[in-house]
Structure formats: structure tokens, C-alpha cells
Image 1 (cartoon, rainbow, N blue to C red):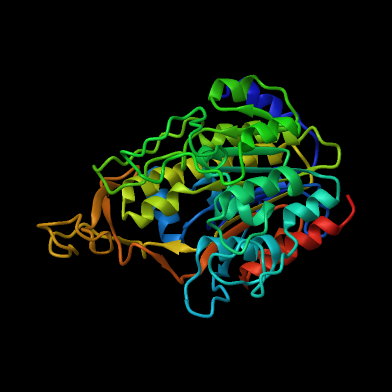
Image 2: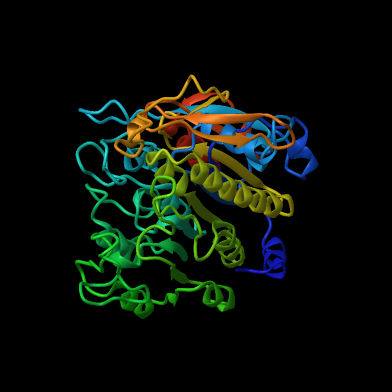
Length: 434
């Protein structure tokens, strides 16, 4: 884990950063000015940090708020100056509700596509991403996630494949085409061929899918051959001074997504906030600025399991990371901060504690996660009140997701809009000369 001294070096980096995060907030009208952001008329963006709360709905965000700071408090992502929301519909011909690949593609490229597509259009043609636009402007780029680094959300910014499951090809494209300077997260299995265990021994007895399965050779070696420093522990990440880093810290996701009490664990080997701190430290060295994507995947994965305790815990991890990004931005003029959710997961509802209003089968609550019992009660911080979480599904829903933003051009996002519109604003801001 990185020390506060390390984070201090991050804050001393190059001026002018933009932060983009995925979730909801309504902020203090004076907050941006107080932190030294330019006024409404200053549209100049040097750097972009995109932080994605996968599956983060307004209800999940509010459950995190209640459990963390209470009814009168605000999360870090609540303090951003401008608020709006995004429609999440994909262009899938068969499904009304998006998946993460199509949702991320909309934010990354401004193009709505079919579910499962990673930055290709309905005809399978590659479409340019924000990361690629930033690269063309000679900016440094990075991808940070608690999921596999080749999973749908980061992949949509750095690769183009017709099917999100082709994760080894996504890794190859990172190394040979998009070339992000920093790649940090999980998913080591997709970088090593069958029979090569890598650093993290496969555990097929626990999960048959957790085996090394690269279809195109040893991609970690290929990364090292092309200039990446490879790290696989918190200590190695903290110690490296490399300008190009590949860090893989788990076989697959950096957590164990299971229902409550059935092996659920949220203890990333390197916390999201520390991966992000390192990425900011490295990328801020570039005199042209940078574009960074940061994703907290566990919100979505635990919501799929109707596990409210872990969903809230993952939301707290994201908020801690947003606070770090805000602190960084406060010391760097020209910073855009945007927080959004790619889609909603679980149909989460916040309810009063009521023994007569329990859903699901009390005799067999684990039989179907889509019909689970209510979770809780959870204490509301700073009060004697409690709340429960009720779920309507174990899948995604079509609900719009909240958006909050702060920094140059952020006022343009304070509206109802499609995810593609949010892309268009950021792409336009990137084109403006600093």
C-alpha cells in the first residue's frame, strides 16, 4: 500500500488535470471555486481522470452515503458542483437493458452499440475512443480497475473487439495498438497461456474458470519486451519508478463476488485508491497531460449477488478514490471531475426496517439471488435509525444513472443526456488547446 508521502508526490505533479468518474452527486455551488477551478467560461482541459462505478445507481450511491456519512453528510462524489443523469440504453436489437460493454462503449466512443461489443459499432467496425483521442494529442494514458484489466469497461477505452469475452486479444491490443502507459488491476489468467500459472496460482477447485487461458502466448513477457515494467504486489507497485507499468494483482477480479456468508470477500491486494495514486504519480509526469480511466467493478458484481454489505463497501472504496482525485485536482488548475454510473444493477431499493415487508423465501434464501431476502438492517451513520436494502433482480436494470461533474466545461453535463452526450462533451473539451 502506498504511503501518504507517495500521495504527496502525486499532488506535486503537473498542472491541469481532468477527473471523470462514474456515479451521482449534487454539490455545493461554491465548491469548484473554493478548490481553485476556473470559472464557467474557461473551457480548457489538460488532463482527464474518468472514474467509473460499475453498476452504481443513485440508490446504491445513497445507501453508501447513509451508511458512511448519514442523512446530513455528503460523500466526496456528492460535493461535485454540477449534477445530471445519463440514459443507459444500448442499441442492442434484442435486449432493452444494456450490459457493461455497450455502456462503456457509449462513454468511450459516443456510439451506441449491441450488448457485448467493445468499441465497435453495430456492424462491427472499430470506433475511436477517448483514450485514443488523448493519445493522438500526445497525452499519457492509463487504465485502473478492480476487475480484470481486460474486462468490458477498461477494454472499451483501449481495444476494439466484437465480443467482450476475447480478453487475450484485448490485452494484445493494449500492448501493440493503444499502448496505455499504466495498466493496473486483475485478470492475470488472460495474460498467461494454459499450463503457465504466473504469479497467482489458479484455483480451479474454487472456480473452474480460474485457470491461465491466454490464447496468444505469454502476454506478460510480451509486455516486458515492449517496454512495460511488470509488477504483481503492492510493494512492487510502490517501489517502481517506471513510466510504463503493467500491474496484475489477481487471477480474475480483485475480490470474491458471492452472496453474504458464502465466501464473499472484498480485500483487493492493492486498494483502488492506491492503484489510482500510483497512476496519477506516473501519468502526471507527462508535459502534455493525461487521460486516466478508474473503475470500481465490485459495486456491480456484488449487486449481481444481491449482497448489499459488500456493494456498500465497494461504494466506499470508490468514494475514497474520488476524494483522492479531488485532492489532486485541487492542486492542479484546469481539472474536470465527472462521476457517472454505466448502468444500474440489482434494482436496489432503500426501505425502512419492517419485519412484515420481507421478500424472498426465508426457508431457502440462497436458492435464487433474484429473489433474495432484504439485506440489513444497516445503521445510518450519526443516528439511531436503520435501513434495509431490497432487491428486485440479480441482473442489470434500465434505470438512468446519476452524473456529477466539476471543473472546466462541467456545466455542460448538468442535464439529462445519453452516455454518448457525455462522451461528446469530454471529446470536445480535449480538442481545445490548453
